[in-house]
Length: 237
Figure 1: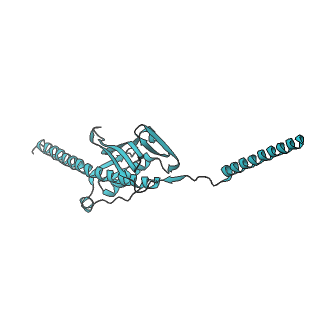
Figure 2 (figure 1 turned 60 degrees about the horizontal axis):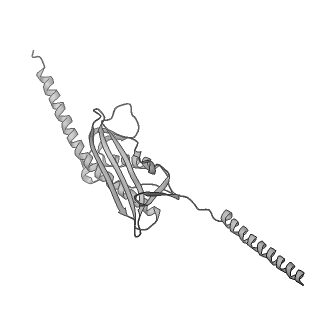
Figure 3 (figure 1 turned 120 degrees about the vertical axis):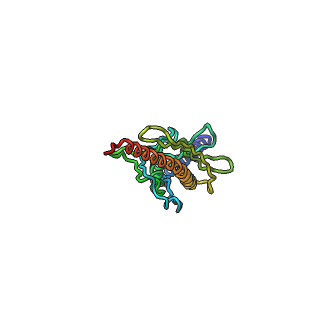
């Protein structure tokens, strides 16, 4: 009788172990054969809308080359960066930039300035001639910032304009902007980052116009002075 009970107990134990093994196998099958997580890719983009007054004024008699942007190392990656404090950064595993963010920001600067007709020519490539100005950008932050109640898009870029002939910095400005995100999803963060970039480029265009006005007046004064000097040195017949 004791032997029969022992055999029955042993059989129950074996059956239980087999059942647990089946559950484990089902779990593994779900892991390996379930629907994989799909990566999603994002781009910064917007359509520049220069004012009628800017377009009617036409381009200044200068050329510009937009240099490759510098970007802080933490953002030099395909993963979109998010943070919940000043000292901790995290990276999305499946929400990725389709193009490097520094490349997109440089491309949109070119697109914006061409649409605004601020210069006679705007390019990113090295030409056979020396341009009148170089535009550089230092990207210090491009990220999602989260707190308990809201998400924010955060973009910080420092632009500078350099006189290509004298190598002097003639204008520099730091833009550091945030905007609340309507819905707590990465796609809405990217939309607001695009809006912030457009806002920065609009402000940059207005400030560059003041600089170019001064440069144009200075170039005109120098030309008039050179012409006057040339006339004063003519030998009368």
